[in-house]
Image (cartoon, rainbow, N blue to C red):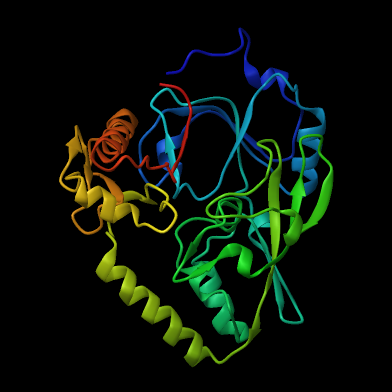
Length: 305
């Protein structure tokens, strides 16, 4: 258990909300690695107005952190002090169709886009639907695969800022780049409007199945992993550097490098967050020693040890 930041019950210091507060919520239930300590408090807002009110009235000396689907996240064993916000209520999983557009709540899972695209006969987001996690996280990290990135299909983002103000930001002001964006830590993405185009269900499924087949052959599945561990250095592939440096068979405690794709780390069942982070740092050092190139974490590491 982490050391509490405050001497009294933190929930007593927080504003009244219509959503839910969960004290000492185990975050291993909310991440793909299935490791890590608890959130001191988890807040699940009822809707955007509830979230906005919370951000306006919260004590600003209490830290906040937002999590999505937990697919690109390593929570350390001491957990996350303060308030962890998760947009997990139905209000953040809705969608609205426009003329060649769709606006998705950021709590929606990427994979849910597949059924929506087929039902409403539009394409353009097939690559995004194959990325693990939720819409919000995919946008904040500018996730991508198969030669496309989230920024290629975004029109605008709805956000709640640190003072609780709600606004819409056009994609050109999001400053999205390779696996990153400009968003301040206390800005919360609540919905995204994407560009789409008309298509047939058959063609949509053809693209999705092709991507699925490629992924099944090249990436681990049915294991506890968080996706690509390290960003690709410009003009290079992280996995090639890892293999070249002799790191493709490394393990630490219950964590190991995937046998299918060496830029994926796997919790074999008994790993701690420290095992996984130590394994990642060992790879960084060994690659740097062998190639003089420093790999950069793509997985977000948060919390305290």
